[in-house]
Length: 328
Ligand SMILES: Nc1ncnc2c1ncn2[C@@H]1O[C@H](COP(=O)(O)OP(=O)(O)OP(=O)(O)O)[C@@H](O)[C@H]1O
Ligand SMILES: [Mg+2]
Image 1 (cartoon, rainbow, N blue to C red):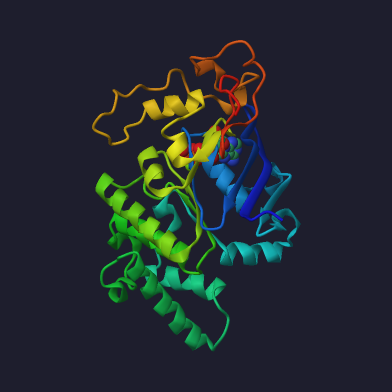
Image 2: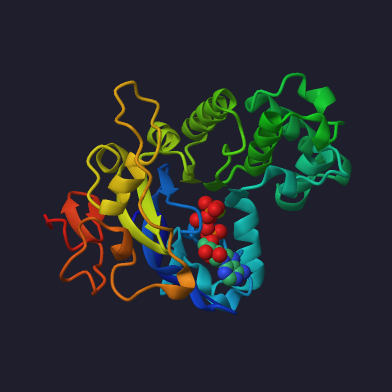
C-alpha cells in the first residue's frame, strides 16, 4: 500500500455549459504525503479551486466528477457511504474557502460559529453542558493559536467587528477546530495586504509544523508558495503541467508555462528582471485547441505539440508535461 495520505488518480470534472463542454480538471493525478505542504498554482480559471473541492466531495452535481480513485489513508472515497464520507470530511479534512466573508455568517457571533463546528463534529463524550464548555474552551484555545488578542471577549463579537486579516485568522481557527489531518487552504491570504499576508502565512507554517498536518495550499503568489510549501503543482487549463519540489520548480522550471508564470510575477527579490506578462489570453476551457493547451501562447511550440504530452520525469520527483523538455 502507498504511504501517501491522499492519492488522486485521473480526476476529471465535466460541466456542460451554453458555450460547450468544459473540464475544469482533466486527467489530474497527484499524491499528498503525511505532513507534506503542497502548493497549487496557476492563472485564474485554471481549475485550482475545482480540483480541491472535487477531492473533498464538494463539487455539485457529484456526477460531474469522475476519477479512477481518490484514496485517503488507503480508503477509496468513491466507495464510502454518504454517512462515512460526511464523518470523514467533518473530522479529518478541512477547507478554508477563497472568500472569508462568504464563509462567515454575519448574523452569528464568532464564538457561535466556532463552537458549532466542534459541537457538530467534535468529540461526543459528556453531557450537553460539558460539551458546550469544551467547545468554548477549544474556541478560545484556537483563537489564541491564531493570535487574536483577548479571545474570551472576542467570542461574543460579530464578523464585521474584525479586520480582514483577523477574519482570515478566524477562518483558519475554524478549520482547525477538529484537528484535521488534511487542510485545503484556497487562497487564504489573497485579500490581505502584504504585511498581514506574510503574518498569516508564517502563522499557517508554524501551525502546520506544530500539528503535523498535510496542507494543499492554493495561491497566485509564488513567493508565498516558496515560503510555505515543500512541493508545488502548476495547473493550466485543468491539467497539472508541472510538479516537483518547490526549490526545483521555482528555481529551475521545466515547462514553458511555469517559466512564463514566474517571469510575470514579482517575487520580492532585489535582483529581479523586469516583469513580462504572459503573451496571449488565458484559454477558454470551452474552446481548447487539440494538443498542448499552452501551445497558442508558447514560444517553443512547434512540431509535435498538436499531440498533448503527458507528465514526464525531468529529474527525480520533478515532472513536466511538455515535448520540449528532455526526459531524465
Ligand atoms: N458550475 C460551473 N459550471 C461551469 N463551469 C464552471 C463551474 N464552476 C467553475 N467553472 C469553470 O471551471 C474553471 C475552473 O474554475 P476554478 O474556480 O477552479 O478556477 P481557479 O483556478 O480556482 O481560479 P481563481 O484563481 O480565479 O480562483 C473556470 O474556467 C470556471 O469558469
Ligand atoms: Mg479559485
